[in-house]
Image (cartoon, rainbow, N blue to C red; front, side, top):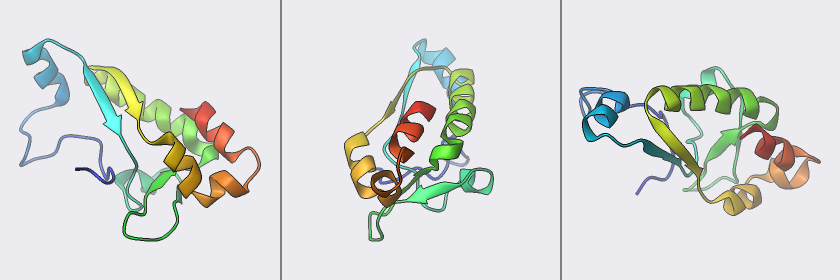
Length: 115
């Protein structure tokens, strides 16, 4: 079970090589998956994020105005690691649980265009 993603990279000591190296060994591309980002994630130093309602399962998504730049960066990394596809799961929940998506005109459509 993964509630949120803090860092979408392989890190030591759990992994000793990259996704690209592992993809080369198994010979198939990856479907890289993100349900939600953690409110405190490694990407928040560079991009702004908006948060869901507070609680035990709080999560964050890239702010609509930076979504295109953020996902471009994320997908460039994914492709360099052998990504053949991407899934951002629970989009209906994302849009309902993040107040900005419900209360700010064009926020959800801007964010979706960014992906």
